[in-house]
Length: 157
Image 1 (cartoon, rainbow, N blue to C red):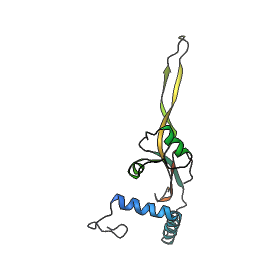
Image 2 (image 1 turned 180 degrees about the horizontal axis):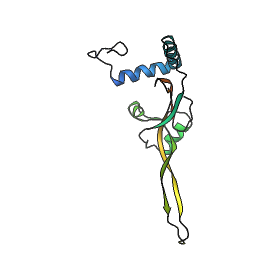
Image 3 (image 1 turned 45 degrees about the horizontal axis):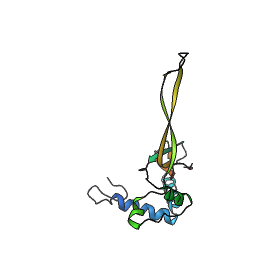
Image 4 (image 1 turned 45 degrees about the vertical axis):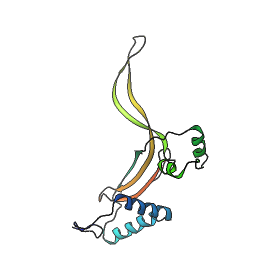
C-alpha cells in the first residue's frame, strides 16, 4: 500500500513542512499548474472527471484579533501596523468578518400585545476567518480546484 511513493513504514513530513511547501507553491503562482497537471495525469489513466461536481464554500474560523483603532486603520489601508516582528507573526491581518446563515426550528415567538404569534426560522451568525472554496468530482471524489479567500470575499472553486 503506497501513496505518493510513501510506504507504511516511511517517515511522513510534518504539517509545518507541508504548509511551507504549499505556501511556496502559492507564492510562485504554481497551484493552478499543479491542479492542471493532476487533471492531465488522471485523464491519461482513464479517470474523466466530468461526471458531475460538488461545489462548497466552508467558513474556517480564525482567532479574533484584538486591535486598536489605529491598527485597524493601517490594515484597512493595506499597510502593516508598526508592530515588532514577534508581534506581527502572531497577528492575522488577512482574515475578515462575514455572516453565516444558520437554521433553527421554526417556533412561535412571543408578541407584546398577545396577538397571533409569528414564526422565527432564520439565524445570522457573525464569523471571523476565511472561506475554503472547493470543487470536487462527484463520481471519483477527487478535488478539482481549491482556493482560500478571506471570509468576506466570494471566490470561485
